[in-house]
Image (cartoon, rainbow, N blue to C red):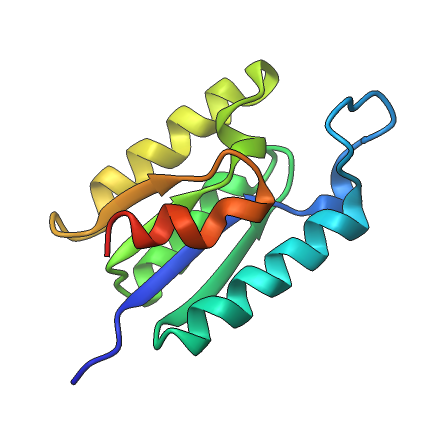
Length: 125
């Protein structure tokens, strides 16, 4: 049986300014949550690939190159890309790249924060 492949797209937490955040998240907590999600998904039998992007300068090409090299059953776009108004244009670009490069059967999902990534993936595959 082929293992389902999951792509986790998010902003590199080292590039995020958490100084004004009211969420309680910081780069170390985001990174730890990402590592935990990766571990949990692998324990559940999924093949997991992370795709950390910058704040927009090369994000489009990084996602495009990743999708050109491999196909995925589920693609998660992190809340840092999706939920922050200043990243709307980058979010739109990423959605359109997925639309162009991923197979029609690929599911797209969204977490609400780094700690519910696994639950978001499990909703769809």
